[in-house]
Image 1 (tube, protein in one colour):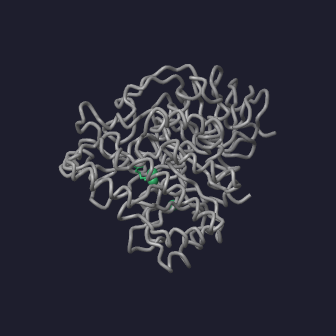
Image 2: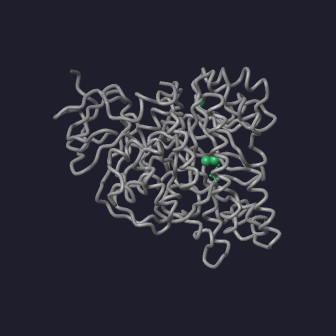
Image 3: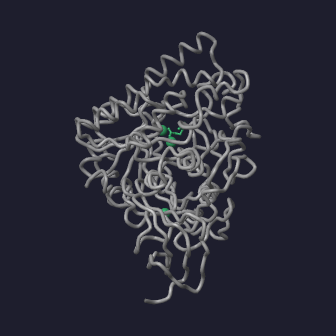
Length: 472
Ligand code: URP
Ligand code: ZN
Ligand code: ZN
Ligand code: ZN
């Protein structure tokens, strides 16, 4: 056996199925040995630490222009540095098709923004907003073959949403090409009806976003998406599931043997709609505006059940970072947003706090096992999105993407400790037990003690295969 470049010694390795004491040997960016004792030219002492596969955040928005000119607070450099500081080695952002332009063109635009600027590995999901015959017939099949094996579709937002016919057409292509469709399931007409009604009653504060985006509208759209998936016989992922009602639809489909996968996010276990009230129904509430919005304690309890019992496959951040105060008035706190909740940019930052929140609220508080934590945050996203076995586990031959975790470290989430671009965190003040202390990307340390350390942007774009969970 050739000597290794790097050995990680004395830690407790955790995978989605077990935990054991071993050393890891790394050569040329890959794991080449997992054994009782490994030696190498360089060594990291991991005693007292957990050795986890690097986090994979499968739902991240970076440098996406919005239709009203609001600027995102993270580009690919700042967003992936923040991700690395939070224990992630791979993120899956979106390459969003602008209506009227070709999908291939949009993918090239996002590569121009990302290539050479990333501090974690990345791979794009495609957002299809304009499924023309050219897109469905030529561009999508070619892009899937090039390794873009997942697409997101929206059932709401004027500039993004597809109608039911278009959804069915996209699902049909996905089945043919063995790609995975992610669905933003919220019923557009119900949201519009509620928005108009609330505005007529003078209810325009950020809080009313939570009433306009009712859980009923999410439940209805989830069921509709599932029905379309059944009709076209295609696996789907329902993303950012917020509560009990849509969960019941997913469980209904699973009982019938359908391949419906589900994702939830930190905001749905830590926040409620009351956070959107701010201090006294004031504009502070805009800091929590995301879609679907956080619900209530009953939904939080349901989400925990789902994280434990396998209803959820994925725990992602849905990092969608905006400024609160932006000097050029493009932040959440902009003039137009102050006239109605409907103009507040939707989305909150969270790529750096996703893993600490699930570890602390889940593992440290005894709600989920450490193996389940690894499954939800690394192994399942790798398997579902075509990155397995290169990513998402600790095994010989896999990329040496490793997060060293101190399960005892106590910290409080504070904006001034984070590395994201936003000027606030919606999780300010949350007490955390367990934090990543070192992030290793293909054998190189990219973050240490909560700070990015990589001098160069060594993240690569990953060409993905077919989902091993979706198309076994
Ligand atoms: O409010 C959210 N989640 N914004 C991000 C876009 C999306 O729908 O995922
Ligand atoms: Zn590229
Ligand atoms: Zn969405
Ligand atoms: Zn999102």
